[in-house]
Amino acid sequence: MLMSQLYAPTLRETPAEAELASHRYMLRAGLMRRSAAGIYTFLPLGLRVVRKVEAIIREEMNRIGGQEVLMPIVQPAELWQETGRWNDYGEEMFRLTDRHNRQFCLGPTHEELVTDLVRAEVRSYRQLPLRLYQIQNKYRDEIRPRFGLIRGREFIMKDMYSFDRDEAGLDESYWACYHAYERIFSRCGLDVRPVEADSGAIGGDVTHEFMVLADVGEAVVLYCSACDYAANVERAESGKVAQSEVPPKQLPMEEVATPGKTTIAEVTEFLGAAPQQCIKTMIYLADGEPVAALVRGDHELNEIKFQRVLGCASLELADTATIERVTGAPVGFAGPVGLRIPVVADHAATEVVNAVVGANKADYHIKNVNIGRDFQVTRTADIRVVVAGDPCPKCGAPLTSAYGIEVGQVFKLGTKYSAALKATFLDENGTEQPLIMGCYGIGVGRTVAAVIEQNHDEHGIAWPVAIAPYHVIVVPVTIKDEQQAKTAREIYEALQRADVEVVLDDRDERPGVKFKDADLIGFPIRITVGPKSLRKGMAEITLRKTGERMELPVDQITDYVVKTIKG
Ligand code: ATP
Ligand code: MG
Image (cartoon, rainbow, N blue to C red):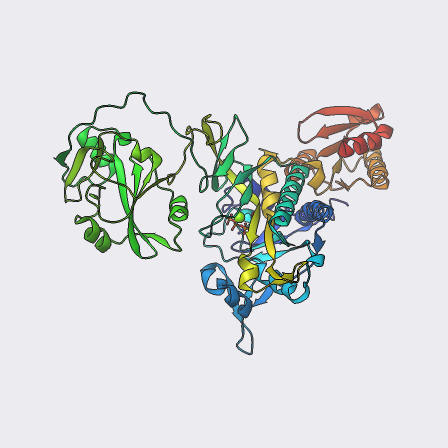
């Protein structure tokens, strides 16, 4: 490819809307252009990268017995109504109506469609396991599309669905895919950490997210540096915090006036108590019924864990009227003493001796409150947000927290969709059984963006060879110099013959401009043909990633390049 012909309009200026390096460089290096919020066109260089990531994914999916299909983007509402997700999906779903007034959506995911496909054809255990995948656009009307490809409204996803006859089969499909994902991300040059994730209120099922640790990530993960424990913040648990051996003596309860002091910060400042000495009481509605959650003053309630513990379908903070009714006090003074609704306490909250709590009375708190003596709880459970420094639940070492970009997720679905859509098969005994399912997604564009987040510097992208749009750029310093132009073209043609993906910068531009573009686009190898080396029959090689430079005789360049990109 000749640079003069390549449709890669590079930008010198940073586009105002781009906050992240990946977003900035994808626009500046001419990989893509925006056409609406969260909706992009891939230009030739960007599409080459996408296709390479897809090729890696295909290879690894095929290797674990995946069979590629292509399902429609436009999906009938009826299927989604069968599983109840036509309503549940809410505003994130793009919906449309055809000329006959029938309703459709643009697929945000394909569980309904694939299950419908399979229920019509799969009859017998002999047809299982079945692993079907596709690579295709997905549509989600995200509330806040941002960061370029990281959170788009139209984006490319690889989604695989597995169908097995039993749990053991599902387990095999799940781990096969898990390990395939490890290979895919590592081949793309990504450093990825699989973390345990929450599977939603349905509970019980297993799921992992594949996280690229990056400060710009939107997800929070906690991991142990001493063992392999890692989980996202929604899921993460804490080990037991060591208690002082001799618990302090329990003091008598004492009501104290705290006029207008409703937050932990205000109360602790006013009373001169530490936040760890307080217990926060929060009133929630679980499926409409009031329930209280207790966490230590310096901790936050994790609503996802709380909901899992309660096993309810809906969970929301109680309204003011409910709070006043169940506590007998205005908002900000709730406490566990005398409360007559179910109370769930976080483990750490139950260990506070002589706690400060709300008095269930306007403008009052109570000091020296002790569990067992002064109030009872319905249940003790892990319901708080785990933070860095908390002990690892597996080995007790302190956990570290980091931000992550979720590039993929694997999920044991079980019979959720097969039961709703009555997708069954006959086992050896001729008994009808529901198919056991798993689903597995990778965001292709988000993966590309994550690779850039992990592989760039102040000059531009530094592509890993495996997914670079081209491997090499050949840059004659002065194209008007006949000898330089001729040698550059010879190197270019020799590389092409060796199946190296190469661009020749044949533009009549200043060398600085050409070098800047080469660094911005991020070709892993640059070959510079300039007067000094050429006099010795040499050309200069620069590796984008390390900045390493060397001179090589022109006739050795092809060998060197082929070795470098294969190694
Ligand atoms: P998130 O929590 O980031 O919204 P998700 O958990 O809803 O993502 P999944 O349904 O698990 O996403 O989709 C599988 C993969 O598709 C994700 O791991 C991610 O890589 C990608 N993906 C999801 N939403 C988007 C989006 N809006 N833009 C780009 N990629 C996305
Ligand atoms: Mg996900």
